[in-house]
Image 1 (cartoon, rainbow, N blue to C red):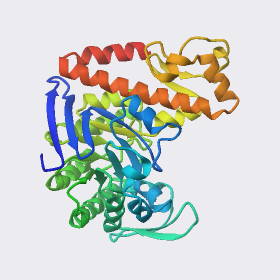
Image 2 (tube, rainbow, N blue to C red):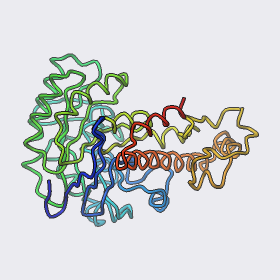
Image 3 (cartoon, helix red, strand yellow):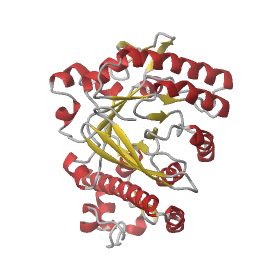
Image 4 (cartoon, rainbow, N blue to C red):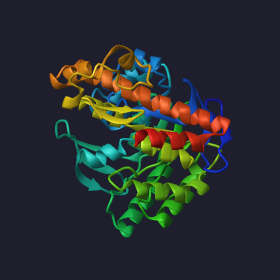
Length: 371
C-alpha cells in the first residue's frame, strides 16, 4: 500500500517457504527487508554510538513510548524537535505503544476498556494510558512507525482471558486510528490471541480493516517454548496481507530470526543483542561465545573469524574476556557492537539468499555452523 510518505515494494518471495525480500520506503529513508532493528529503549542503543550503528548497517532503531514518557517526557522531546533530532538519528525510528511495559514493569491498579491506570516504576506516581494517550505521546516523539495500544496476554492465559484481551485490543485499535492524525507516521495494528490458533486468526481478521502501512504480531516470545511461537506464525502466514511489511515484536535470537523469515516475517526487534553483550556473551557464526569463560584467557584470536566489525578486526577473545571480567564498560560496548553487526550480517545474508534463490541452502549452512 502506498501514500505520499510510505510504500512497500515486495521484490521477491521464496516459493517454497514464503520468505520475503522487499523495500519499505519511509520519510527518513528506505528499509531493506528482512531487517533486524536494534532497540534504543530510552533514545539510545545501550553502549553503542549512533555513528557506529550507522557504520555496521543499522537501518532503523526502536525506542519505547513508556520509558520516554516517564523520562525525559514526550513534551520535552517535541520541544527538542522530535526524537530524530533529540537523539541525532536521521534514519527511521519505530516506537512501540508502551503497552507491554505498562503491563510488565509498572504496578497495575486497573485495566478497563478505557485504558490502564498504573503507578510508575520510577517514582510510584500514578498515570493513565489510553489509546488516545499512546497516540499523543508517539505524535510528540515524531517516530516514523508507531504502534497501536494493545493488551498483551501473558503466556499461560486461558482461552477466555486471551479472548478478552484480544477483544479489548480491537476496541483500542479503533480508538488509536480515530486519534491518529499525522500522515507522516505509519500506524501498525497488532495481532494478539496468545497461543490459540482460533484467536490469532480472529485477531488478524479484526486488524485487517486498519492495515494501511504494515502489521505487527505481538504476544509471542514472552516465555513460551519456541516451537509454539513457530506454530502461531505458521497459522498466520497464509492469512497475512502481502502488500505491507510484517513485524514480529520482541524477537531477536539468530535462530528465531531465521525461522521468522522462513515464515514470511519482514521486521524484528529485540534487546537480546546488547543485553547478553553486557554479560559477556557474543553471538557468532559458530554459535554463542561466553568470553568470560576461563578457556579464553590466552585466546588471541578474533571473536568471530567471519566478522569484519570493529571489535573483530581489532581485539581478541583474551582482551574481551579481560574487559568483561574486570568490569570495564569497553567490554560490553565492543560485544554489543559485534552482536548487532552479526545480526545485521545474518539478515543481509537471508535477504540475498531470497533474492537469488538459495534460501534453503543458506539456512542449512547457518544451522550446520551453529551446531
